Amino acid sequence: MYRVAENGPRSLPKPSLDSGREVARAQGERARREPGVASASHEAIQPGTRRRFTPAEKVRLVKAAEAAIASGERGALEALLRKEGIYSSHLSTWRRQLAANGESGLAARKPGRKPRLDAAARALLAVTKENEALKHKLRVATAIIDLQKKAHEVLGLTLPELPEDLS
Image (cartoon, rainbow, N blue to C red):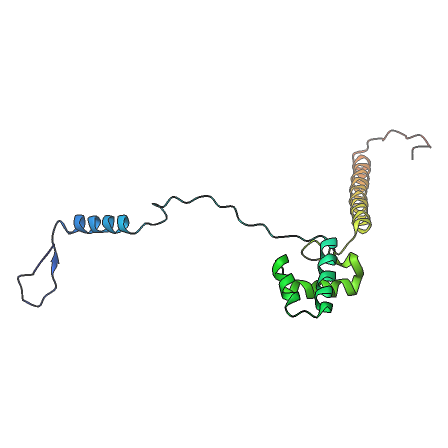
């Protein structure tokens, strides 16, 4: 694989001509011994879905937790939490929401910020924008008509007379 250089006993070995093939062969053997992502056959596993609790389920679990605490039996609440597969933080959050807003407070909410405008305010804003756009178009059209009138005056052309009801 390597040859010793002729210019001294302690010099670095120089690679031989076939060292590139040997390195490639060694990498291939290593790849066969160490299965990687390319050589493994993986099954397609779907990601888990997050559990969602309805308000009725939340109320049931809060009441069951209260009953477990009231029973006085040691470990009853922990057993309930394990059986239902929930954390104590879920229970405390649901209790807080239930106390603050009743059963409607347990309903699922859309994530993210609340919209600044409700539907009526958005509709009013759209109508206002449309009104401003139409006012702008009217100002432009009026300016064009005035310009045409001045051009006719300068050129000495007569404009057709409009009936009284249209002017």
